[in-house]
Length: 246
Ligand code: GLN
Image (cartoon, rainbow, N blue to C red):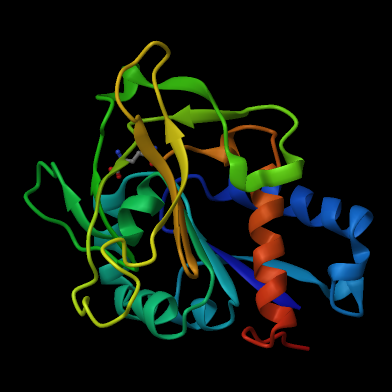
């Protein structure tokens, strides 16, 4: 099967697995033609706590939770370097939600602890806890054009001590890649407070294989982003970039 992992050190693991299962079932019933030949063997969802488990995965979700804790536990379990390898060397599809987005950023600011280890992969600097503490959590309707024709209604974005992308930074090796200042980072979603001024906050980004959202789709029953992401994973399989095990 195509093994899709959810990093299970801490945070919203079960919620992602449950939405992944629903999203997979949706794809199986609505678009069986995009699946590998044996649909019963399509996806296997795995909780990842060890380098061995990570090695089985073709794609990975890093859930929300608390990114400093996640980094400390990942370091202790010998997972930080394998994660960096997975994202930046093997270029496998990875999606980080909230704390997961922080982990996937090259830089994070406003860390009280004065620095934390990151996996990286997205050439962005995130601002942690952009909207304040837990009680300042909120839900807001987002327009997410990348969902395309699938977007009949706005997406309910759940923001819990959410980070935002504060700045898109040039890749360290930049200048010769021809991708310009943005280093290939695509802004896929913006949140603008009702009546708010300015361009709004960047809350969804993608850079090649790496995708990040400030908010928590896994805390809704809306499968659209999980469906979209699993389709990107299937595309990688079709193009032979990802291995499917027997
Ligand atoms: N504020 C948390 C962090 O910086 C993220 C919160 C979340 O994942 N809901 O890690």
